[in-house]
Length: 293
Image 1 (cartoon, rainbow, N blue to C red):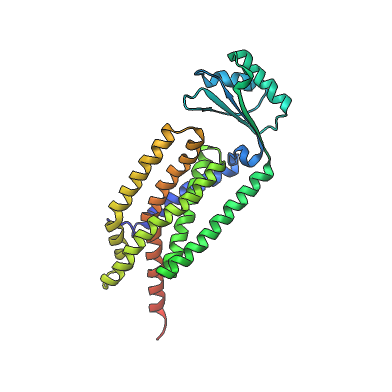
Image 2 (spheres, helix red, strand yellow):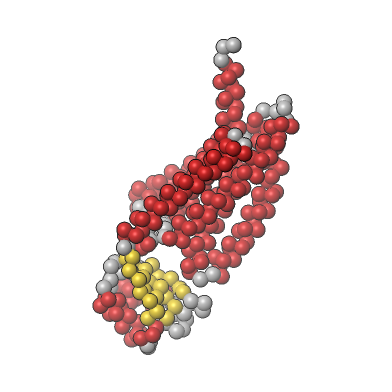
């Protein structure tokens, strides 16, 4: 099992996903939710099971181009999100259509919220700042506990995870919203923990495997921690997957990027971080050997 030596394969897979995501983002743009673009959210209690097509028949009359999702424990409520800034008059006019179609009372109009683009911009900027600060802190900690090369390799793997999740969202046109930002920050912490476990074994094997090259050390370390990484990921995926299937819409919006992040975090800790470290150490050794004495 030569995982580290086959780094070109793993790097190419990641690069292909990132390029595909970048192309989709350039061609059709990232599907930003109303948390970032601004817009209106309406939540209505239908009081019985319904088909989304019935809701779309109403929203299409007003050309809302809305995201329509089920809500409530029994999925008898609907959440309508549109990037249009609807006035109180517009919202009541739309609700009156629902009242007539489903024979609703005024209490069925659960809530309505307006979102401004300036709030979304502030959230996005603070999220980016949080990731940068967290990355710097992790780099300092790993450098202190291990070495600078371990730290940089871990941060590169971390950036890889964030970019892969963003690329998946761009490719599949999944809305990027506040729960997505919260999930990304959670992924950052999860991914770095998995990588540190592998690096801890690498550090031990550097002392034990004196005659081995750095790729052999990386391979042995990955092999020793592989079952632990897979078992931990499967256990976490089982829990997050249950939340995604059984949870309400707000929980699903948070759990979906977590599912993608856990998979990419496990992938990067095995196939990205350790090969980067082995490449760097091998390059450094070769460069030093070419220096005149």
